[in-house]
Length: 78
Image (cartoon, rainbow, N blue to C red):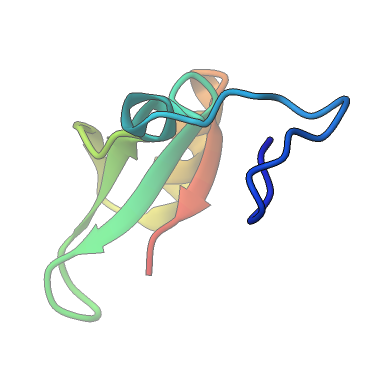
């Protein structure tokens, strides 16, 4: 890794994370759960780390259970 003065530090990676790397970060291990609709109504959608909708559920608990059933780690989106 280079510092502000452009010197390489020993033991640090020389490569920088690309935009594609950042977009796919967490893709195989996490799913995001988000409420859709008005407060108190609506459903819960499940999204892959890249934002792709991969499912829906009638309530938060069911959404989290579905994510865990597919061996992913559920995270809430506020």
